Amino acid sequence: QVQLVESGGGLVQAGGSLRLSCAASAPTFSSLAMGWFRQAPGKGRDFVARISRSGVTTYYTDSVRGRFTISRDNTKNTVYLQMNSLKPEDTAVYFCVADRGQIYTRSTAAYEYWGQGTQVTVSS
Image (tube, rainbow, N blue to C red; front, side):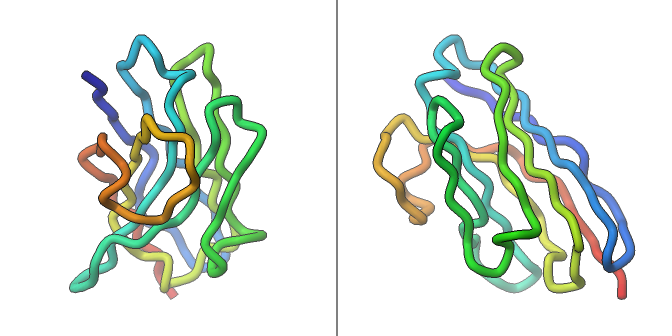
């Protein structure tokens, strides 16, 4: 079983930065593709970013590309989301996710494991 615990959320002014972390309790962490989704108030869960098992390949939704960076440290079983130039529209609960499959997907159904989420609020 895989457990994911996010941290690093909070309140920040527009233009600021935050770094989210996700610690995974998974003996086979390096075999999992990892990612982040977010859910704004009153909306569904949207794909944000994904990173391959090795960390070599990354994917981003268009609205965050160039501002957010996903990375991972397989020695620490941790994945990160560095968020720069934050905007009020980035306000959401951010979820860390894990996928045992290796095919790139933005579908929530493909990610077997989810964290509890961490709130990010960007004030204008």
